[in-house]
Image (tube, rainbow, N blue to C red; front, top):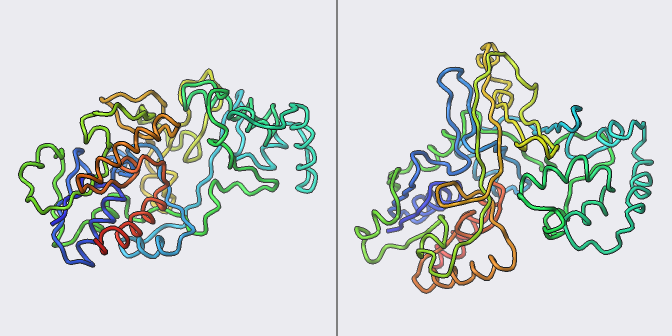
Length: 374
């Protein structure tokens, strides 16, 4: 028997593989009242709009194995994510592309001209060896674009001066010299046609899987058989009662509002890069499913403002703080888990910030490597 703690996308994938391939019994528990972890969605009863509980989650991947696996459980739409950002009262496209640069500088540069233009902007800063996030960003796009679109947003996201953050956080800053406004470059993109809630329901719909929600690991641990294999996708420090200290996380607070208008912002996600605006972005969920006609006929819409904040034990952990101190601390908890025969996985258990496709990919390979051969 297996016990999987956490019904997020990593835990659900592992559970399905064990149940289907190994024909073994699996108990899946989650302390929340829903499956899907931070990728969960729900249907707003008032408007019929599918809303993502913890900020926008768009599925995108270039991994064929992951794409083929998930399509066993749902069909995907052809939605391609686009993001806008508001700075100083004006709207720009993101990530930074030719349209962003031309609008910001009041230019009409061609693709073959923009690289040289930015090189001059970068040279003015005189940074030859970036030592922190700010210097890294300036060395990629120049100081004006950095201060407009990155500095304030980063300060809000991390509650920290960008000079105090490592350069590695932003080494792969998206930058385009054409008018491509797609947020992601992946080959396959979309959203589950019938909702994330249906996707997770289908993944976990197997006679070998027993699902228990509103259930913590501590409440069931004593009743588990001695030969059970525990697969834990929660926080490792919490599992071991913080014996080595607390791992650091960033959290998010969401402020929901139903607006009495048909369309509030005209797009799914609007970022706000000004440091004076307390939230980082506003989500308007009806735009994720333009194929669903009824929500668009409704003279109401659901929006959600997203506020980054420091984590404490009363909140939801969202982003690991992968610095030297936490990497060393996590290694202690990983060793403890290994000694007790507990397999750690998922975003929380692995202390990694994965997109959904990377989580599924890791789950599939973990199943092959650490469970089938165990």
